[in-house]
Length: 167
Image 1 (cartoon, rainbow, N blue to C red):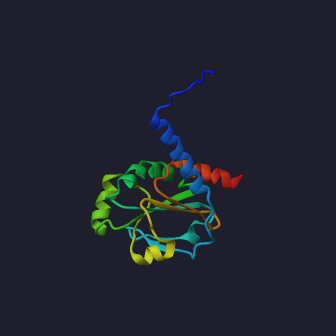
Image 2 (cartoon, rainbow, N blue to C red):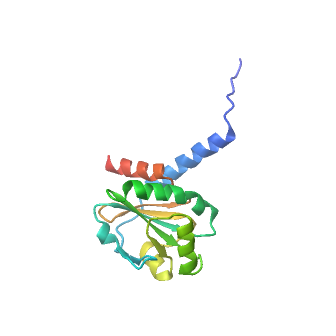
Image 3 (cartoon, rainbow, N blue to C red):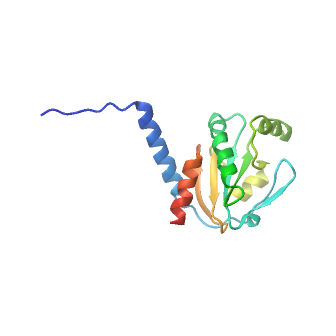
């Protein structure tokens, strides 16, 4: 009996597994409603979760020195640009990245046009710990934290989780 073996490039298998695992992690429910965070971004603007009722909110912990964080920046920019006027906003929280001046320079150099907050203890106490970087929390339009993900996210992953939750 002959056995047929298909050769599939390893990088394609790894990428498919990575996407599947991330999707499962993003789709995994986490508990409850946020305590109603209030964050001030680098421009001095206040962002309160309650102000975003009716929109999905992706809070993303990142750092200037973190390669996976840098890799997901274009995805977050695209996600924010495609949805900010309608149904979703991205808020970035810079963790252990130096002074606000250093972070502001980094944000400008990388064309990050979504709100960026310095990740001081009072900020992480409101959102949740950053046990890994990058790390993202997704809040529903009612303010419920519906998922948490350790590692990179893509626009497609976030949109898939939202689509699944809407159906």
